[in-house]
Length: 337
Figure: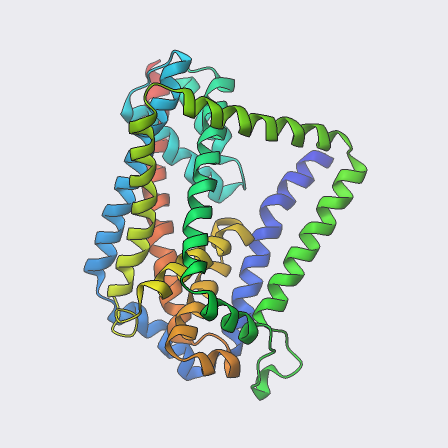
């Protein structure tokens, strides 16, 4: 019973947190801001959204092929089709239950290609190491070319909103600070209540190390790295092209887009599936690069948050649709086995 309650809280709490954060910003918009938010969806050039979806699909397909290279040294060669379906089921599982995607991926491949769960899961852990490194490189590059802008953005975000309707309110950065503090306190308490978690963390770190070394030793490391570059190039690309959908974002510099990509990634980390936080984080960056004084006076504009919501919605809808299709195909295959 206790375990069931904890599992439910893992799903409900991040979801409610994301919805609250979005409601907090939405309630601070006046009617004009709300109209501008909706206007983004009415006037967007959806050709570029379609292009972003195609690029996103390529990234998923490339990830499926890359996974096969990691499984090959372990003595397993699943089909690209089954590998792709397992990945998409994992993505949709992550939306429903945080961190459930990795286990779902390994479980699906166990059912379709009889790949042992521990081996499948281990290869995914190794994959995550490479992805973390790639994200770190992109973040470092974005910060390097935007150091002065990022510092200026920090100074703006730490100031409370100046509008009368938000007097006594809290700033964007303060909200994120509260979330981080609560999460850190919860983690420390968990370590005190369950000391065995420390051992699991040590095992996890060791698994990351072993996974990383296994990739360096694999015979197909060159194509593995090539597909890694394709995957992350597609991630940035599908985010980038959506900026061509509206007149007020198509002229933004590459530096702004890179910082927006990093900010959106942070939004995904803060709440489950980036609900609430992703559009606000991306919208805040867009507002800062367009009219930084507005970010100080009243926060991200309704128009810019609307753009962030457009980016988030296009990515999420793609995952949900492809994930559901893959789930149906996997269930159909299971019945034949």
